[in-house]
Image: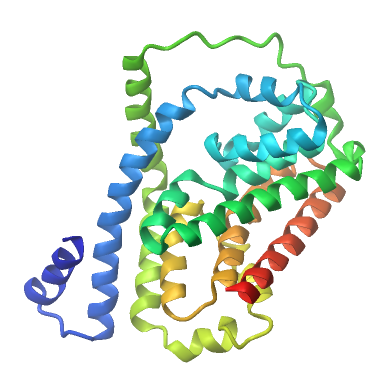
Amino acid sequence: MLKEFASYIVYDLISLEHGSHLGDALEFFIYDTIKIFLLLSIIIFVISIIRSFFPPEKTRKILSHKKEFIGNILAALLGVVTPFCSCSAVPLFIGFVEAGVPLGVTFSFLISSPMVNEVAVVLLWGLFGWKITAIYISTGLLVAIFGGFIIGKLKLEKWVEEYVYKFKTGQSMEVGNKTFRERLEYARWNTADILKRVWLFVIVAIGIGGFIHGYVPEDFLAQYAGKGNPFAVPVAVALGVPLYSNAAGVLPVVYALMEKGMSIGTVLAFMMAVTALSLPEMIILRKVLKIQLLAVFVGIMTITIIAVGYMFNAIL
């Protein structure tokens, strides 16, 4: 139905030529814009209700009483349903350390939260089906669990900025039980707030996806990041790092790249680089991490993401 509506606007109302570059690009843009914003509105509303049961204080309490590897697993799983944005990285990091959460467990949470975005899960399901979605979830969780585990084993607490350990958040305050009406009101407010903050990024991403869909020739991507290029995965990761987007915002670009023949492993590597290795995220984390620990974190993430990309290119 949405596809027919987009086609009607482009080819009947605007009277563009069927099969033209501009027509294909504009049809893709209109169709994906309507579809993604509808999905975002519904999913953010539902997930906001779920998130109202997991305030940061409760999250920290759950993680601070577990053995480290179990904590890595729980932190990665919890990161999926408590997807705090990158602007929350610094206060969350300080809160986790102050609450006694091991450093590696903290990183498992911080890796999982942007990588396995619940909005992206739903959108991936709609765009690519449950198999690709399962690959995305399992891959993100594995990266988060083992990335955090390795950082924990290296005992790198000395490379956390000293003021973090001196920071006192005071006595934790229990969040009172909210009524269902209050949760609905929070979900409505949060949905509007998130859409207000991300709509431009989503529009830009859809525009890039539409341009790729309509104008970029097949052989261009085949040459630089196609299935026959052995360096496609690291190239995709390098291209993803400078971009600033969450997983939902980068999906239109991902969809267009897959349509142009990019392998699923390369696409996943690109998506993970955008969401977990973005320059803004690194700049924020530099406020609480010394350059050595930030370099270790980036190195582990880069190697792991590239390895995951190659692995899924080999098995799919």
